[in-house]
Amino acid sequence: MDLFDHLLLLSVFLVLLWLFLRRRRCPTLPLGPCPLPLLGTLHKLNLFRVHESFIQLAVQYGNVYTLWMGSKPVVVLNGFHAVREALTSEAFLGRPYVSSMYRLIGDKGILMSNGKTWKQQRKFGLVALRSLGLGKKSMEQKIRQEVDYLHEVIARVEGKPFDPSTVIQNAVSNVIVSVVFGQRMDLQEALFLTLMESIHSMMHFQGSAWGRLYDAFTGLMHLLPGPHKRAFTLADNLKRYIGTQIQEHRHSQSLDSEPTDFIDWYLSQLDKTNADPESTFNEDSMLQAVMDLFFAGSETVATTLRWALLYMVTNPGVQERVQEELDDVVGCSAPPHYEDRERLPYTSAVVHETQRYSNIVTGGAMRLSTRETSVQGHHIPKGTMVLPCLSSVLFDPEQWDTPDRFNPGHFLDQEGNFHKREAFLPFSSGPRGCLGEQMARVELFVFFSSLLQRFTFTLPPGVTEPNMDYVLGATLTPHPFQICAVPR
Ligand code: HEM
Image 1 (tube, rainbow, N blue to C red):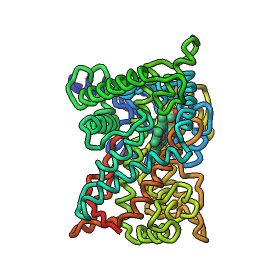
Image 2: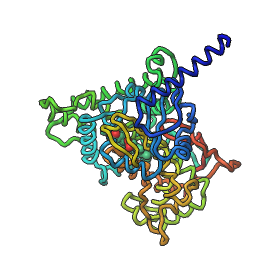
Image 3: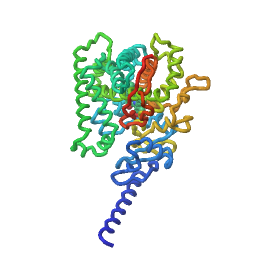
Image 4: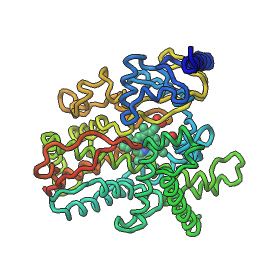
């Protein structure tokens, strides 16, 4: 045997020893593909289509299996039953530490916090949003205002081809702006455009391969140049701007009148809890809660609406049916309202199917087990990262007739009435499900139905097949596309 053979033997021995020790360290985790040193099971994943890899691996390893992100185990849950079991359990209410999210936003707000901080911030977030009109007409008025501006911008294009992404993104983000800051911003204002660019870049970095590299090799990445540096600078600028808004609100705060925006609500909460040493309310957590709302609440709704328009131009028969229903039920003089949805079952079904089929949150958000527990009979130790894969529910062949085809019929019964589906989980569910679900539902319905009431969307002349594939970021977004909006 020469030196090379000895080295080869030694390497094989070390890898086997490593695998043996790893297995001994975590003997109780569900089985999964065999991890490699340093890489873990990264080689088993297509990093550009991760959620598809999760579903494929389930065929081999079952609906509950373990992957390794470097040296850290992640238990992946697939299919409606496993995912629902986890989401409804109190044992999975934690969030793991994710260094990119910690650097971008922090863990004192709602999205990434844990324990008492999360409980207090989430409860407060829900109460504040409800008090600001969530589920009431006043929130819908804020949305309607942005819908009207969006109509104006689109009408100015006069049916010529245009990319609707930015105008939709700006309109949706301005809803959050007015909820948080108390007034909308001018869509053309340089400051507004800079804020939008910051949110977009943060989201894009977080969901990209750079984000995963930063999470895996944080110390090293700190020293290297790359898109992470730009994302962090933009996040810091956004935080600075929110900080100035907080100061301005503080100066104009009136203790006699009812708070009118999220920051006002938070300031009055600070005043109430100042003397409580157990309180988790402070200026840092306020800033981070505001960042959470921007991060989680603008791109998600805007991306879903972009997919909705793409599905309409590629399924003109569906678009026609929605417009017929709108014409019959609402007419063309008054705009559709959220409360009309019960009389608009086909339109509702199309909005739901858009959310299912576009699957924008893909794998879903990572959770952490806060105690020893089990899912579908598989033991999960305390402190384990768990990914309830939402795609695997939205495309579960046991739950949907044609999971891989856009089919509004999934949400209609034989008589054409709207049919609720348990496996419709784009917002996740349970006590740690999406905080903004109600607001997002109103936004999606009102934006979508109003756009279709006013315009017919078509592909530009000469284009027959738009690119329907997705780009993986923090959400699954469509590739840039052009459409025509013909006034009706
Ligand atoms: C189409 C739109 C949206 C989708 C598909 C969506 C989806 C989700 C999902 C899947 C989660 C993870 C929940 C989990 O851990 O299981 C989440 C969390 C969250 N979402 Fe949304 N969301 C949307 C819109 C919004 C809006 C408009 C807001 C804000 C007004 C918002 C605020 C949040 C917050 C704060 C969390 C963190 C909740 C927590 O950790 O307790 N989301 N969302």
